[in-house]
Structures are given as C-alpha cells and as structure tokens.
Length: 352
Image (cartoon, rainbow, N blue to C red; front, side, top):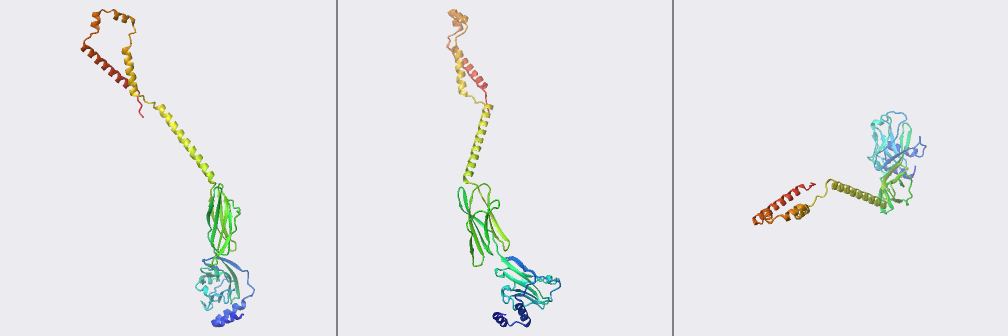
C-alpha cells in the first residue's frame, strides 16, 4: 500500500466495514483476473451498462457488492452493503450516475448502469462479490462521432475542389474520399485539431474531374469504437457539355416550331384561297361593258342595211328628241347598275 493511499484512508476515517472494503480493493489490486476482459463501447452522453453476472443465478440482494475503477485510488464508484449503497468512498464524478436494477439483482444480474457517459469515464472497471470470491473486469471505451460536411471550395469548367470537415470525434478518426464505385481518391493530407474538450476535428480537400454521374463520398471512421459517418455529393458534368446540349435542344425546338407554322400556313392557303379584290373586279367589269357597247357590229349585212336606210327611216329609228335621249341614258345606267350588282353577287367569298 502506497503512502498516498494510507494517507487517504486515514483522512476519510471510514467505518470499519468501509475500511475493510478499501483494504480488500487495495490488496486485490494486481491479482490475476478471472476470465477475459469485456470491452464496452459507449458514445458520449449516452448510458452504458457494465455487465456482471453471478456464476449461479441466485438472489444477490443481501450480498455485498463492489464496483470500482482499478486505475483510481480509491476507485469505488458503487458499493452495496446491508441493503443500501455506501456513499462514503464513492468517487465524486460518479455521484448520481450509477445504479443497479433491483429486479435483475434478484436473479444474479449485478450489472451497473452508468448514465450520461463522459470522456473521463473511459477506463478499466471491476465487479467484485466478496462472499463468493467472484470478480469480473470490464474495459469501457468512450467515443464521440459527428456527421461530416462537404463544401465546394472552387468550381472550374472541368474540375471542382471539395473540402470535407467533421468536428466532435473521439478517439482521433481517419478521413477518406471515395468515388462512385467505392474506390479511394487521392486527396490532400488530413488536418487534425484537438479542442479544449479533448474532441478532434478533421478536414481534408480533394480535386475531382467533372464527368457524368460523378458521386463523391466523404467518410470519417474510428475503428476502435467501430463507428463511421459519411456524406455524399454529386459533381455535375462539364459546364461546356451542358451548354452544348442545351443549345442543341433549343435549336431542335425552334426548327420544330417553324415546321409546324409552315405546315399550318400551307393548309390554310389550300382550304381558303386568297379573297379577290372587289374594286379591281368592279373596274374590270365596267371596262368590259364599255367594250361591248363600243364594239362595231360583226354582221356586214346589217351594217350595209343601216347605211342604205333612207334618212326618213333613220330619223324614225334614231330619234333625236332630247327627252328620248335622257330616257335612253337612264335605262343604260340602270342596266349597268344591275350588271354590277349581279357581278358582285357572283364573286366567290371565303370566311376565315
């Protein structure tokens, strides 16, 4: 027993039973362990169960039970005797965070529940039942993990630079870059920082060439605690390829629209021909009527007869009375008006 341990024992002045427990812990330290050491991994802030079972599943409620840290002096974290917990030599950092299940104790299960695990809780633990001379050892490993975050540092036409960072790890992890097929990518060195809370922050950068379906994975892992976290990012193809593809699509769409417009125009012209100009038709009709009235007679016999007609008969057939001339002119105008009306009625119409 070291002088420090003896001084601690005299300073606390424990009761006789507590002194016996402390002496038992100190004397048993360094003895051979019964069975292999069990390793338990717990994440920071979670609850951990340190397993311990009696070889014979009997009720251990009336037995004396000790849970201790073998790397501390004194290292009692939970002592059960005389149907209650002894708090005299308990480590201060474990107060209010250790408990046993009374139902499980009746069946020989004396496993200790440690609440809100801290980094300082990592270490070796021992479960000891003096009456049975049975002890078992547990090694508690505390870990802390967090999800990585990927950022785009620079984006060029053919390549992109990515950075992955993950903070709040314990123990120190490793960072890996993977491609879409799960192959390792050559990346820059991993930068590691340890904060005042003893947690690690890791970061790394990688340059990736742009190509189709380029999925990149950043994985942070810690093998001692069998924990890993990863984040994925999709790197799009080259910007030039995207622009050329977009240009081709736009050109094809414009050609398609032009073809549709031309087809509709041709169909419209076939179904509905161009509407004739009424004024132009009216002018042509008047011109043709004037030509009819001014045209010379085609029959020479009639012409001769007119020439050989006596003056008296010519006067009778062609009176020179002004009133008669006006009536003839009015009738001619009336006939021309009726002819124009009939011509307009015969014009083709197209309603669109």
